[in-house]
Length: 576
Image (cartoon, rainbow, N blue to C red; front, side):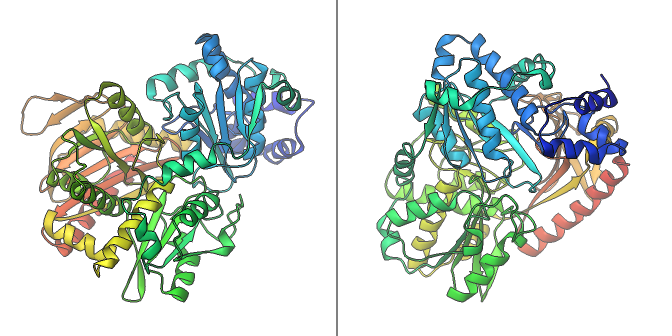
């Protein structure tokens, strides 16, 4: 069935919500919009399903949610009655339609005889991850699109280990979804009846205290929160972390936190920000304004679903936004140095980071005798490793992080947890302030000891089916004509995660990469520099990650800019 036939089928559907019927009317005479909405079906990426809301097979709506859930339900039933009885736990964020999608998901699971636990009100993504293991459910679902624009929503699926589904399981699940067939023909269930029967159990606050108590194990010295004169300005960016953050800091008797009031209440329009992404300095506009008022030492911003943390530090009257790599390095140094102080560093300790995350953290970990392991981009791969070593006992995972502001300190959650991160970074700031240092002072010392690491990310948006083709073709061209130089620097090796091969340019034998296949290319350059290119798994983007190391900040910055300019030029040609 082509996109035009699919569109007509939706047009003739007699029972269709008014918002979807209006959406169909708007695209009736726009073939490009029609093709984009109906030319393909939503599929799982590195973070599950994510896309724009609206009418169409390539949009998030009650029908595509129902189809995805039906497929997962069949998968669960095929895993046996015990797994169906263990069931699924569901939470949702503050986005438009999130609660409605969560209710539809719960109803469809119940309709297929699967026990379902549904949060009555929104809870953060890491609490959902924790809830899977706390309730011993077989799976979990989080309705969220993280920090994407307001028109987006998503559907993240978790396994019984509390981590997002790994590639193998995601592939199996999506095969069941693809067999479901016509999403418009699936019957609608009765939510209220399933609640009355007990097949859907509503969660109110039962798990909150358990999760909060786990969070309170993060600090090394809880007394620091009571005694410090540290001043913090916090914003949840109209998301759902405000409740959790206020609760845990109240329990720690921390009195130095001011909250951006205009951004405290959940709001799916994110009205006061251009982007509710703590990676963007614009997201800190209100926090900076309020920070000046109280001379805050730290500005802390958490994204709408509560899993990413952004940090800005006061320096000479202004605020400097830390990168995810810098925050990760500071947190890692504080964590390992305090563990060493308390004689808690295990001999088999290990940190896990992604292949696009700075080598800065690895250098810091090496200093403490702690090993580092790289995984593919996406926190699901960190969660997968945590479970692997939890089962084998080979390594004790001390910290997991990625450059895109995701951190995990303790594994009671198996996804990035901004609630954990905000506790650790605040305690670190209080600890170092007691010594007369800011987090920037600590960062400068680490650079002097380990070298100046600098990184940047370039994201190129290519929307629609045509955009997806351009991105695919660009990666194909890179493989057909391997790069020998990027700017003035020679390529010493190419890591192709699609073929799982490392190819050396000096003629040395190639090596295999012991990671899952992924459409990613990484170029290792001279002088500790590298470039990695990959399509986003959750957004219509192609991303270029660039990292360098040098003896001085000035030299590192110059090196980074040269590589960035040269690689953008290469990719601009390939994307045409």
